[in-house]
Amino acid sequence: MIEIEFNDRPVLDALDELMRRASDPQPALKLIGEKLVDSTQQRFVDGRDPDGNEWDENTALTLAFYLSEYKGNFKKDGSLSTKGQRRLGAKKPLTGRSRTLQTTINYQIAGDTLHVGSPEPYAAMHQFGGTTSPNSMIPNKPIPARPFLGLSSDDREDILDIVRGYLADAL
Image (cartoon, rainbow, N blue to C red):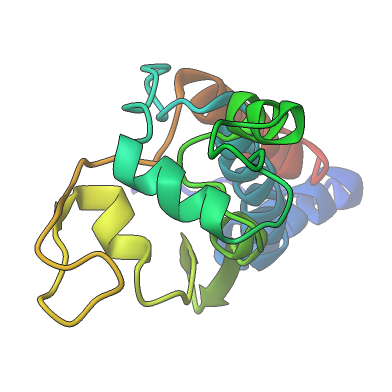
């Protein structure tokens, strides 16, 4: 067996820092979590899934329900007012009056694991699609999957940049 003793203090300090950083990913996970929250919220603005595919348009039933939440959308003769037309033109899938789903995207770190999501009970229905329950506001209706969680190619590159930068800062 050959043993080499190395006593270069700056190099040893840098290697120690690299090992410390590699064993404590939480600072990097925090940066990744913040990045993924931002990119996920941007998907609601863009109306696209992580792969860049457009979400399915809102159904007529969804649009009618959306218009019923506001006053001034209809003229006295029942036709759509200018205000109603503007509202419909600006209505994006998964973006309701409160924007709750979009604004509750968050991240949590548990040990060396990063979780990104929303606490809203209906988030999974929108992510994966399904059929509404018989007791819901819109009973027994199909909801198409509109994935908002996941990694885009840009997210992957940003994560790699964050990890590389985090480890490089140790040197």
